Image 1 (cartoon, rainbow, N blue to C red):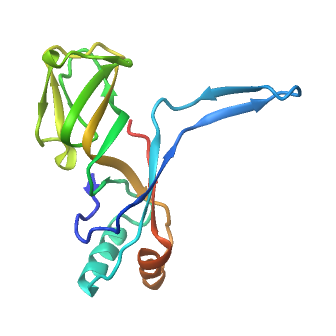
Image 2: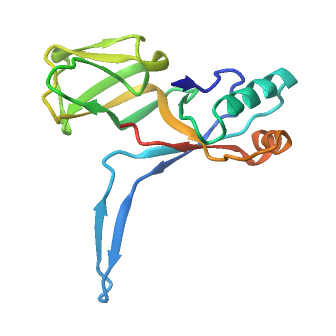
Length: 190
C-alpha cells in the first residue's frame, strides 16, 4: 500500500475527526437505544499547506493522480507526536506472533487482548519493519484465534485512508491544499 508523501509537511495542527458508527433508535417516550457497529474509530483528516514550491504542489498532485482519486487506499502518518488510545492492531489467529502497530512509537506503549492489558514481559516492540515503516509487536506466544489486539501508544499515528474527492481539476486541487483543505477519508483498519 502507498504512503502519503512526508514532504511537504501540512500545516499544524491537522483536523482529525474520529468517526464511530452508532445506530441510534429513539422511542416515543424519548428514550434511546444505541448500538455500536464498529469497535474502533476511523479517522478523517483535512490537510492544508502554507507556501509550497511548484515542485511540492506537483508531488502532491502526482500522488493524488497515482491513487486514481478516491480509488486506491494509502497510509497517512500524522506528522507530530501525540498520545493515542484504543487503536486497532489486529485479530489473532493462533499462529501469527508479529503484528504492525498503527504507527511509529516514540514513548510509552500498552498492548491489550480483548481490552485486557497484557504484561510487557509477554511481548517485544520492534522498531520499523511494518507496513510503510510502522513499528511492530512480537508476542512470545501467538494470540489465540479471534483475540482482538489493540494498543495505546505515544508517537506518530498511521491512518489507513483514501482521498475523499474522486474528481478534481489541478486548479481545484491547489485551491484545496491552500484554502479549504484536502480531505482524506479514514478507512477501517481491518
